[in-house]
Length: 259
Ligand code: SF4
Image 1 (cartoon, rainbow, N blue to C red):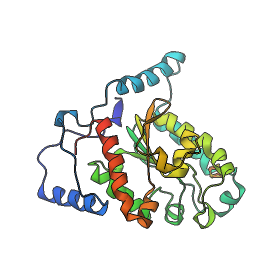
Image 2 (cartoon, rainbow, N blue to C red):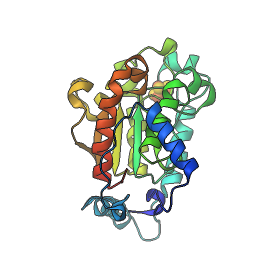
Image 3 (spheres, protein in one colour):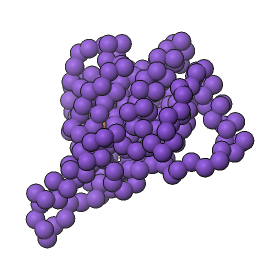
Image 4 (cartoon, helix red, strand yellow):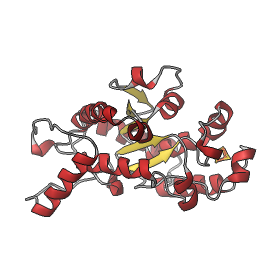
């Protein structure tokens, strides 16, 4: 796996404080059970073939370019797209009502991307995805997975807030597709976790409901894709947290992350 996409150092002895925080995150995320730990050595080790998939994608880009002009770094590609998004007015209504565009956050070589729907009021005000109540729950879920927000990339289908948080219109998704596709291509994650119906249907270009998409593996480019419920749905339906945790266990097992 390339660069900073290798998110975790080998874990040492866990402090009582860290253990307490972890247990609180698990409780907040609605998690009551933990799978048996597998080999600690496998933590964050890519599943067989995945590292080579990503490496092959990156090296093939270099191989196809001219030797005198190396491929831009993912950070550079993201900066270019971020600038285009900031000036975008393709969706007239959204461009007129937004406070900020909300591009995405995280390391440009993250191994895992969380892909949501669209900014809400808090995200529109801050320019940062998933910072409201649903975002705080996503943070709890990430921490319950023994990861942190600093080591995953978080982005949405739409970069601008729909008024009154209405669902994105099909034309708006179509307008913004170029941006999220280029964004994901620049990051080249090994795994993408779609959060909710809009994200899953947009990425996989399907009409299937989230209830039928979750718990299964798909591919997008060189990434393996899993879908689960959006944290906003969990705020309205806390009983669904156990389903999200089931999906996270499937994801983490594939990533080789111990719990
Ligand atoms: S949602 Fe996407 S396509 Fe629409 S105005 Fe914002 S950046 Fe442009």
